[in-house]
Amino acid sequence: MDAKQIEGDLALDQTYISEAEIQARLRELAGEISEDYDGKDLLLVGVLKGAVMVMADLARALERDVEMDWMAVSSYGSGTTSSGVVRILKDLDADLTDRHVLIVEDIIDSGLTLSWLTSNLRSRKPASVEICTLLRKPEALKMAVDVRYVGFDIPNAFVVGYGLDYDERYRNLRDIATLAPHVYS
Ligand code: 5GP
Ligand code: MG
Ligand code: MG
Image 1 (cartoon, rainbow, N blue to C red):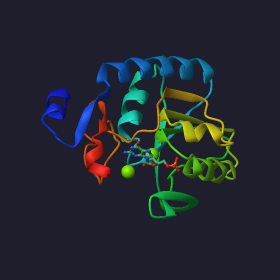
Image 2 (cartoon, protein in one colour):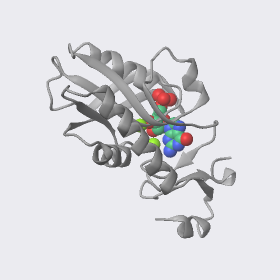
Image 3 (tube, rainbow, N blue to C red):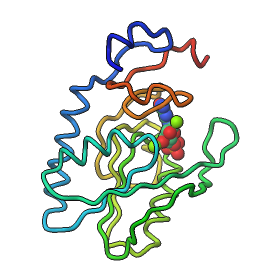
Image 4 (spheres, protein in one colour):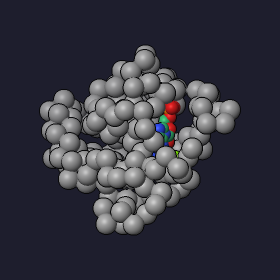
């Protein structure tokens, strides 16, 4: 899906971050990551399903070999707020012992999921665990978890596209768009 289809979809407001902006920023992050992990092996851990697009494009923007693995988690929450209590739906295949792990995420909102995930992965005796997220919302700035690589800091609006869904829709949108307020209010 692209910008023309956004215009025709009443649920979507407007393009918020374009495909070109996303790709340019990912290339910058990939440059930093390549430099920081020079001479070290690197395992990218993608969090399903939202991080699929970021993972695919970030991994290909790196000028080096990486291993990719995936995890699926679900937050137990009351309604729309995540509680920080997380259940693993699909665990990693890789053994993390002595590995350099970079968690790849689509978005950090409250940061509760990622905070839990980071300490879970740290308990597996890796050499290091860092986080790369394409988007970060203001709430996340309050969390104790240190995010090494951030694509864009965005205001507190609900966004879809580029892996991010609204009720499982719009993940295949090339750009990131805001959801029209009438959809959720
Ligand atoms: P938290 O950081 O609050 O534990 O949870 C982050 C998760 O909430 C993300 O992985 C994503 O699934 C969902 N989320 C948070 N903000 C947004 C948003 O603006 N759009 C979409 N589509 N999902 C969001
Ligand atoms: Mg996610
Ligand atoms: Mg979702």
